[in-house]
Length: 138
Ligand code: CO
Image (cartoon, rainbow, N blue to C red):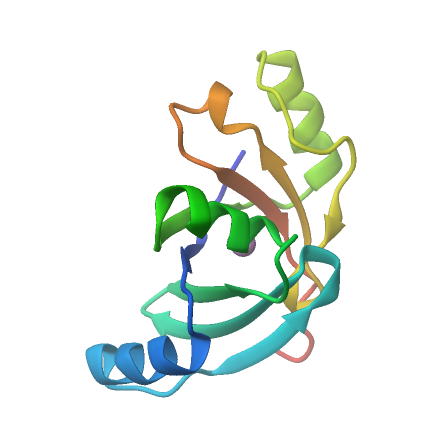
């Protein structure tokens, strides 16, 4: 079962400008930036308490984030729920009747493994489940 909200991801057209804006909004700099080639996104992450706000910019026209913005404009792209065992969670949710965008977990940011539920099975909200690499020395 999901243990917490790992992050809320926001689709943005211009990551550099959005990063500046969110730095002002949150009074802190991004703690992590990464190009996630597999997902065709560039990301900047901010911490707000236990939750991360993740800004996402598509890296090319074929990026799901670029397509999302073309269709719906900038805004909340997905909510990520953290799980301990992603395979077990995919099996549990399939059993409950949820549809997934992909069959298997994919590589996400920060060495996480992620899987997206199809928004048609979750009231139009794209939900990601993510399993995070074991934190070392923390
Ligand atoms: Co995510």
